[in-house]
Amino acid sequence: MTEPYAKPLLATLKGERQDVPPIWLMRQAGRYLPEYRALRAEKGGFLALATDPMAAAEVTLQPIRRFGFDGAILFSDILMIPWALGQELSFGAGEGPRLQPALVDGLLAPLRCEPERLAPVYETVRRVAAALSPATTFLGFAGSPWTVATYMVAGQGSKDQSAARQLAYRDPEAFAGLIAAIADLTVEYLLAQIDAGVEAVQLFDSWAGSLAPEEFRTWVIGANRLIVERIHHHRPGVPIIGFPKGAGAKLPAYARETGVDAVGLDETVDPVWANAALPVGVPVQGNLDPLALEAGGEALDRGIDRVLAAFPDRPLVFNLGHGIGQHTPIAHVERLLARVRGR
Ligand code: CP3
Image (cartoon, rainbow, N blue to C red; front, side, top):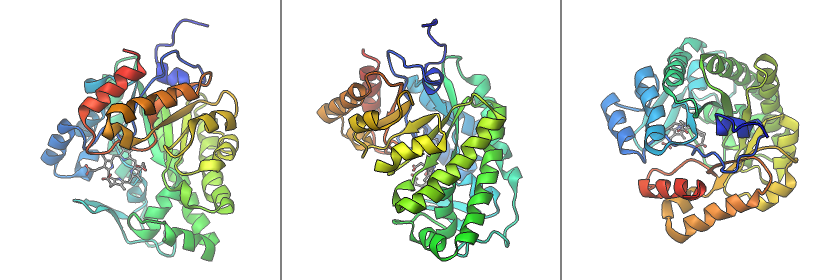
């Protein structure tokens, strides 16, 4: 063993198991924090916040300051890519995101690509990179093409992603064109995040679980592999975390065939099974149930211990199985950190 790596999260993503697992939480910057709610109210909405580099950098740093997580995740959203591809984006209060026009036919032709809409994000990255302590790993991210496409086609979130799934069956060529356009801009976006200062990136495939096996192979494994190959080729050594939420039994194939450096597990995955089923040595991230964190008490302690015990030899990044809920008490997050860190 060499001396302890200065950045435990980055070291873990590169395959070096740590005695105390590094920890960060998906959606760690967000509405459960009073300081986030105050700044969001001041800026007047999510998009105004995400496109103001000074404010977005501040929001990225808020949970680091409060809790000392091992990783800071860029404050932005996976829907910045549809916005840069030319759809209009809004986040109405309490109704979730809207994209217009909905791409029901999958064709981007009526839209004008506006990649300069991503410029504030790169400025946010530069500001955060300059402010972070050297022990904290800075994570960039993007949505995976399938998940981003589900929003672009429906024009909003949907329960079963049926509009995109239908389009993929009815007109696979048009759908493949949409996936390729998302993948191309996503590669450009992630490379620019890396050049501006992020040290690893996560691909969020939040709706990977809604696809049948053959479609999963094409739209999840295939599309993520394309991105992973290109990032690895252009920026070798920058770890990529893949998070195919809901993939279940398809996780081992996803891990082997996409080439991701680490795999995020959602809370429905049995961690003992995952440890046995995933290729030896591949780092995992997860997978405490966000609702156990919200509930606290016994359920929280048992949930934490189960994750910690499931990976005796594997590099582990402690995280939730999905984003932290907005009603999560701050005290429960403090308790989680203390228990994972053993004090
Ligand atoms: O993790 C982080 O703290 C970084 C920031 C981040 C946000 N969204 C900020 C955000 C990240 C990594 C995301 C990813 C994201 N966005 C995903 C993938 C992860 C997942 O949760 O499955 C998806 C599907 C989206 C799309 C999205 N953005 C939705 C459906 C919504 C509305 C629902 C909601 O939770 O409010 C958003 C808005 C959004 N993105 C908020 C935040 C903090 C809430 C905005 C607000 O009202 O302040």
